[in-house]
Length: 274
Image (cartoon, rainbow, N blue to C red):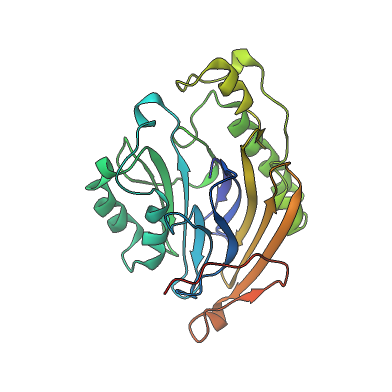
């Protein structure tokens, strides 16, 4: 997951509204968002190589987590553990958000650089792999491959602006999911220096990335309400065309008795782990 914009308003009827693009190599095996067959309370996409995820919800316990990578020279080496396990680990955990991140801080050397958002139903926390966990302040936020709300990232700034406009005049879930669809590259003199070549930095500057063999694989919208959660994931092929859609609604009154949400019929299969 490489670009996230979200509005955190914990005192309202919709505490968390979020839109995100996940960027990844197209050769990496991925399952679209669905209930995991081995853990049906988890609603998430799945990385079929390491069996973690980049964004997901636990429908039974009412938890959410999302991840972005950090793009910096020091993190281009391989590390022991997959960062997607940070998200799936939280979704399976019963620890409060702050305590879970305290545990993760002890294991940080095992992971390449990351940003992790975790929401336990009450508190939303952010952890950057170089900093200490902190609660997220109410308001509109943007996150990509540096720390939360880092200035000097054109696509983070445009993502926040677009979500602000959507919040002023809300549209459909699909409108929200497709919000970060711009393939326009930022001006070279406005870009951060993350240690990659200037040409690669420029190619990665769009909200929606379309490179040879690498790009935006899916877009996800989430509206977390007091009595329900709505999710929509749209997936893309290697040419950037829409190739699938998965939609969910998790109702609070149904959650404890049956954590399986309503699922649209237009979805990709998930991996059955035995």
